[in-house]
Length: 130
Image 1 (cartoon, rainbow, N blue to C red):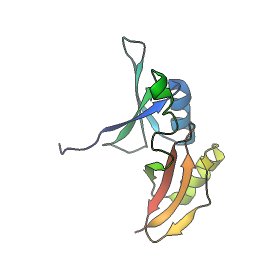
Image 2 (image 1 turned 135 degrees about the vertical axis):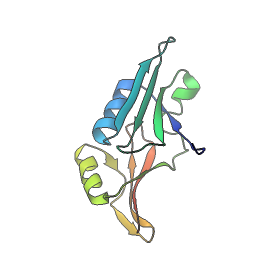
Image 3 (image 1 turned 180 degrees about the vertical axis):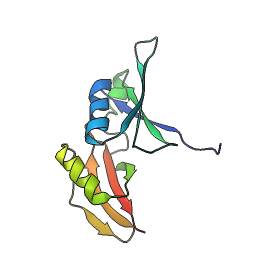
Image 4 (image 1 turned 60 degrees about the vertical axis):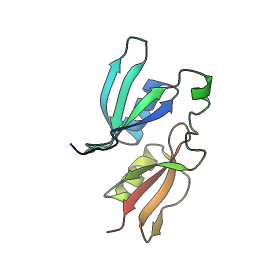
């Protein structure tokens, strides 16, 4: 197995609301939701068909972590969701209540629009140019 980044932790306020957003609004698969002895949960979601990377939804445990919910990257786009069908995914996500911060743009590198997750973290929905 080649070396790769398997999980990226995303600090959330509540497991269930985060699972709902990522599975319902973004269409991700819930890969794992396992209770841990300390009362936390190991919650992993990923886009359908993804095999090497996923998000670990990690509930904030203290004031420092709670202060980072929704601002994990200082207000810049920090997450990039690639798609093979920008128009379909943009329409589905919009209908599911995802808040896009801009109209879709068609750049030399592909079609893109910035959206926020339920906490305000910024993402690019991106279909790379062929």
